[in-house]
Image (cartoon, rainbow, N blue to C red; front, side, top):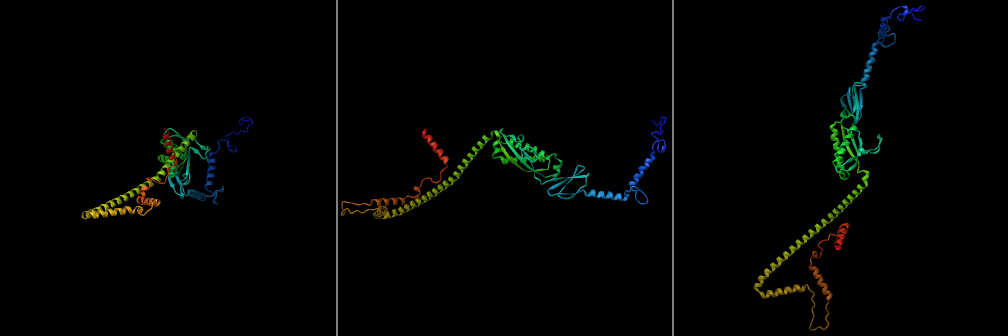
Length: 400
């Protein structure tokens, strides 16, 4: 039933309390709010406490000071050995702190990001070894690349790095690992693309790794990323599986070629010094023989010069003496057999065996030792393959 209908309670919605008509008393509401606020801040009665039991203003001040002290103490932090702290104030860089006890304005004014500068981090290009990665094994889109001679090689790298500047590492690069990986792929393709396939897969592996490391460091330094490349490891470099067998055959042929070259060089290093030594010995013997012949000729010449003077004084006597000396030297080196012709019988005995033996010994004594040696003896035989080839060529020549 409506309030203004017959039989109603005659109370309109705007009636005051106690049957008073009109809106609520605004002064009363304000007064009630003031009482609550004065009780909260400690204005009170004779007993020094508010009616609600809240501590006085002095106690609240102590609480505020205590909270401020606790807030200030929360700004102390410890940086472990091998790590650096990057302090930011409202997101702006302030300082880089070293290991030990440090202090900063607590949050939300300043924050500290701790960066491990000694940790060896790594990325893998061309393959995945597991861990947090879902893919394990080769990653063809990263590993396969073209060489200078338009061949395809499968190259897999592992790059190890660490942080050298914590500030640059935090602020200058959003995702350092992803950035480094992209730079590594670019440097890898550039170096491999400027090299031949044989160079990358054989003797140039170390040089390729050194060039890739230099390229990565140069590019990453231009970004001021705060990253130091410690090592680049070439995990694997090989041709694609489709041509693997043919390439292995080529490698074996190259190894055989190198082995034969090494054997030939070893044989040359063994024979040439001995041949040079034998030649030097022959030269020394020839020089000695030359000096001996010259000295003998000079002695004979001097002797004949003296004999000429004696011959001019007494020709007959000198001629007879020379004849006797010559016969003495000739007969002294021969095996002379004296035969009595008048008193001998018809049977003569000649010791021919002793005469021949004596003559041989005289010849061996007069001949110099070097004259009986072969022109060249080293006692070294060349490799069997070289001999076989020479013999084959000789047979082919005779066949023709």
